[in-house]
Image (cartoon, rainbow, N blue to C red; front, side, top):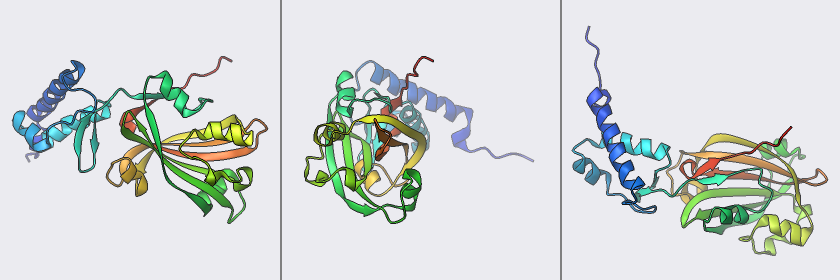
Length: 247
């Protein structure tokens, strides 16, 4: 009996994938394709490399996994900037971490208001049933590219009048200056996730596209709950780096 092999899985196709990846990578590394540059359409690229769309997509997917390019829904492929180095344990505000890396950040509030805490949050935060939370959703851009969608969940009793404040500023700074609340310890979880709804739209992704989900529960210096953040990162835009303390 003869086994059937897809033409796209043959050694020739595999070699083509590697050649296309290498050719595009050399253009990026040499600076001929600058960060933010939009690549030609998949049809144009497949014609230039004399290959099929399927083989081309394999090569593009390899570069995407390496963080060299990224895709935006209905817009095409773009050359990526260097990954942002992110330490979830960083105690200062996000803006400070961005400035250290000579990057530019903008923050846009997507929505803000009171909600009844979902079951999962009640369990995570040890809240009684039907508790009320403040929810603030924000979209963050690095160097003009949308890379992070954050859902913040706060206890209303700790932050009276918060919704009247400028919520595009650093919340860490706002907590300290207006409410005298400063971070102590944090508990965080990093898992693969999927972008859906407002998250997908904000990050210019298709529904169910992969993202890196960081959930962080923050406590103050007295060990009392401050907030819970759910950070949805474009996985091709970030590198997690954590430096452990000496024993």
